[in-house]
Length: 320
Image 1 (tube, rainbow, N blue to C red):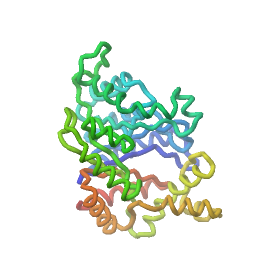
Image 2: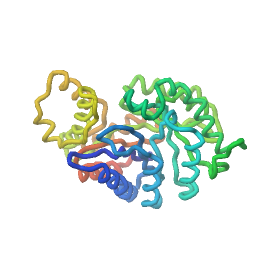
Image 3: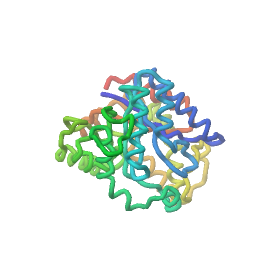
Image 4: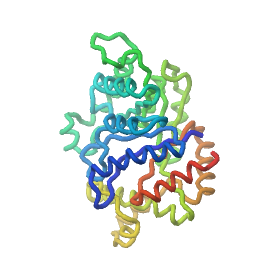
């Protein structure tokens, strides 16, 4: 089973965005040494707790700092960008780091009206994801009036994030889907993707990457505490409209919560894989068996970077 990493350059309390970005690049080197297959970065705009706003730029820094791990995006939000420009960016990346670049693409737009306005887009732009994706891929394969140099003829591997599952099937592309979507929704989307898949120059058969928050530690309680900072950040964003830097589990668990905050906090802790290495191994094997996944993309964030690295090391040591 291939194991990969998605890092969102989350800031920790008292940390600058520049520090978070440098930690992302350093983390890529660390997980490369552990044997992970890919290292992806994400795109978020106007989010105080997330430093990763320019994924192709950050992917270039990751690729330059590593030698064997695949580098890419999870993903570039295509409604925010012109396909020509995205093709040019990935063409440059593939030219500089041949055979190591992944082009993960999503259909989401900005989280708030203000962000969407600043980007010059609105919610309806997501509806054009399919045609824009086809246009983007065409820059690598077709002879077009305006060519996206140096993309023509290159084969950057594309992936589609879950909200575009139908498009992934129609255009014959690998699919990335989160386990946190809920069991029924996730398996239903995967089944529909496989049933509707049409082979393409990019993929001859369906390929499914399951994205999951995974926390491993010496004890189940220690692993659970690794999930607490992100769960509280999600709770904060849903009650205050702002995604904050990650705090320590001790600070969060000592914070008085309203009934609504408590309910959202507990909900945010559900659906993730955590425990001792043995417990995590059994849970991941069951997840892969239920979904037939080809790969697991680990997306875990927590306040303690050392504990996070230990979690990834324990996961890498599992015989999956």
